[in-house]
Length: 397
Image (cartoon, rainbow, N blue to C red; front, side, top):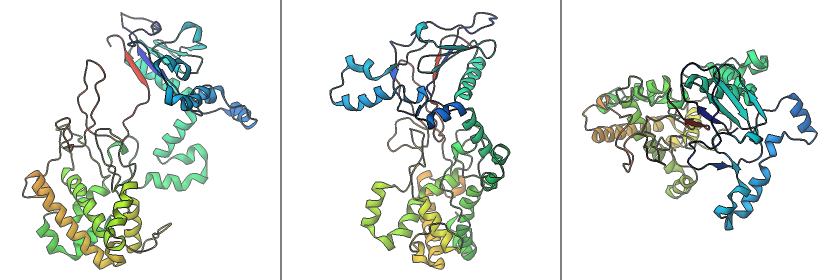
């Protein structure tokens, strides 16, 4: 679904949102095109029609442009853009408006011939309400399924066959709504192994000044990379810094003795150790945590679905693996103390935002590309920050 928002200029009490003229304040217009299947969640009648071979119009009405664009790419010119992209400018041409909805005073939703909702609101609250209303028109069932799944209450919506999903979603330590966007996904269920190593080697743990329980406690609490009190310092910075320094060391020490350096290097070209937080926002889409998770759980004697063909950490021996965990964490703690210039890892302060444009980046922050005269300062990291709708603010709130 593509959606355009407009916040209309406020000029005293007005009963209805003021629809702005077509292409007003849009810097010369926009174009876009979507592949097939990007319309909306179908209703029962549309599903039945689709089974008979008649897909909903909004699933296929841009497909000819999209298909032909792939063929035209080598010789595409600016003059050809209107052949392969639909008009996505602010507002809608009067002749293209096929339906208008006013779900409440101060809100207007105009649907154009591609079923794109153009949302107008007299206030910001009106505009947000209209955007939610338009989204629900197109995908209410999917939204409700995801909402119930996130709360561990899917059974209420679909039935008793989803009990297992409820248990997984409600498991202690698992993030709920609004929690996962700042979570470090290197959270193997085998997190008890580092604590076991510390219990076996208490003296070594104290000398390290970085007990494995620190990382394990962070993992059990949700493994967040966040600054809740707004002081521009991560709330659990020491654990974040330790995990970032520990992870590559742990993987090298666990897997390289078994598979060799060349295999490690070639595999990392396809799947890096971690796709961590960075200026683009989205993170943890790939990485080796699945390998580590299965390897350590099998080593602990836990049930593993689709286990690896052999043991890697410590060549499959628990005592050796514990030594690897302890030694690599010790080395990580040394690196962290040096990087942050502290004598104790507990004193580490990991910034939520930092100097923009540094290479390598000194913190997790999201950075923006300035496309006009006004720039946007960096913001603290969150995973998958994309909000796939357009907001045009054309007046004061």
